[in-house]
Length: 339
Image 1 (spheres, helix red, strand yellow):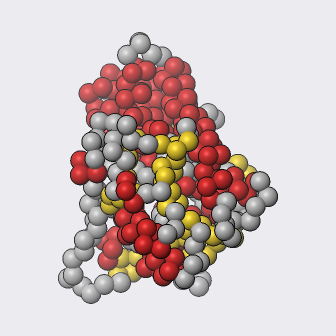
Image 2 (cartoon, rainbow, N blue to C red):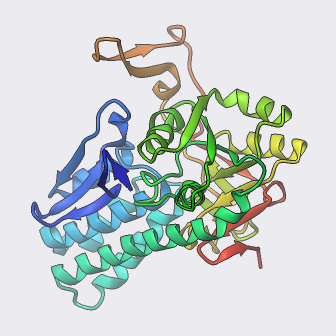
Image 3 (cartoon, rainbow, N blue to C red):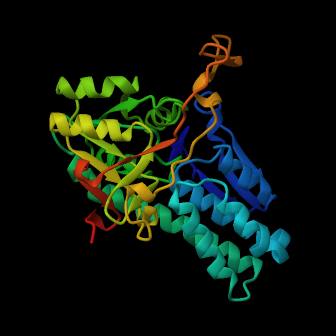
């Protein structure tokens, strides 16, 4: 997708510098910076610290990181680097699919070149899946006045390119439609306000940021034609793990008759997971809720406390939306149904 008119992917291989390149998402929207590293540990830390986030982008970063590990430290690939990458985040299943793909590639006495080809193929496949999701999703979003509500960031930053939830929106725009997007700010890390709104602005798509708690009221007022979100893991029965707040959106959408779509590539489906109860939910540090980053009018960055000193926080990163609350789950193959 575009940044100041230039094409970028959220994660890629930098051939000139011989390392993994990723967009440092924590700096957005105030500063755009692409980081390049030739150290696989830096890639693992980038995933852990949410420099790279979003299930498909996490998977692609892990794939490139493992290709780099094979170049730098092949004897410890299986004993150290595979477990290291798998341990970076617990909920997004794409991470584990990517690690499995790279492990399989390594079994055939792979050369460093072959391992990099495998990682690139994994990332390219994610991009193609996301593009295809948008083709299926766009007609579903072409309803009413095309006022679409999103939650968190399921855009190209989270999905290497195109995005999952945003892919249908981008397809609408490229077809000459004029979608409008309500962007939930998405507490506590504000991925909607910081990332999704920035992405949409780069593509010239009209949007407005709103507090998460405003979503249900906007549906009640008839100001939302459809809700579309991404996913970090989809269980065999169709239960969906996604950013905290998604479950509440599904309840409001069902109450007000607003269709709610989940957009996810096949790499996000976990047939080994029977239902949402079996999905591990990542608990993140209290500071994400109690503190906030921003810049002042002079452009200086600050980290400030927004809660009373000595108060603890509850910070589940994800929740689970039951399949019965979802109008459709859309993958690159079209509408998906549990077996």
